[in-house]
Image (cartoon, rainbow, N blue to C red; front, side, top):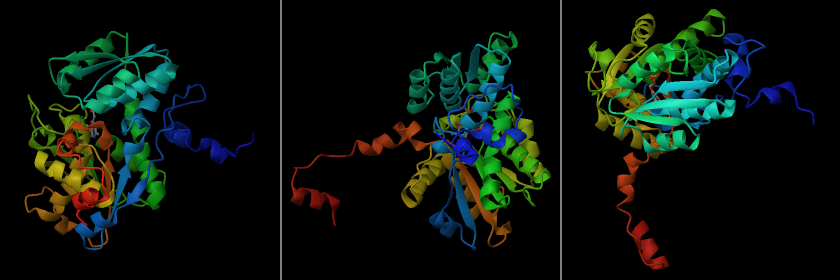
Length: 366
Ligand code: AN7
């Protein structure tokens, strides 16, 4: 069977697509699940709500193979680990990293251990770690405790760490910025995203700069990062000992890439801001019901942040400063199906009715 080169590359993942920008060589065994190449969706309702002729796009990372942006970094981290002869991976996680690591370890035929804060992982993500066959350890502690333990275990050399303290993870995650520039023909004016351990904001900024240095864009975006109000160490500029938020993915009190996130914000003339759990849930619902995109709560923090910039005088970055007709990209970092418990409360209100046209019509109310 004959296939064109372009066809072969399509759906083969971010390493094949962007190899010249990644730390790989011919001797790197590529472990891919066809990650990346995610839709950059123009959002008409969101654009209308922001107004001033702004065009708002969503980079929907929820449609990656394990349902989050982590797969971009994981393909590079696992491929490089294998190249170095690793036989076991380890990570700490609030859920998505563990789901992704477990899947790519299975694909590579090596083992994977995940260290998780007990009782704080969204059920879909925990289900994924089990399904892909990871060795799962739940600790009486939070993500920051888990990462401390993983760092120590990694230092002994028994495991390859695949958290974003591994630079191969950041390298892979840069490809989301490349795809956005490739799709728009230039960088956007503003890029909004949620911030937890702060690897992704670091990666996007590095990606935008790398592409700019290669003349693939003529501008750089303003980076706007959003933390949950109860887990906002970068915003408050101090470690949060007991972070709390409904957005469990970003329930992190001492981010590993804190300094790099600060640099990205300063260099891009951006800002870090907070959004409340109520604002996060309202944004999640709004995006699902007005644009048809179901984001997990952490991802909805970026949308809540967009609304805050637009409406609040207290926003760290006021959209009064945004020129008319700006191009805005928000990253939806993970799929809403990963965290069904958030929405399932509403499902419990569903009452069955008699199986008749009359009863069904009455309930529809039209
Ligand atoms: C959906 O899985 O830290 O600022 O261990 O799952 O790069 O940490 C997840 C983080 C945003 C924050 N959105 O990204 C983990 C983990 C979602 C996430 C973030 C995460 P970073």
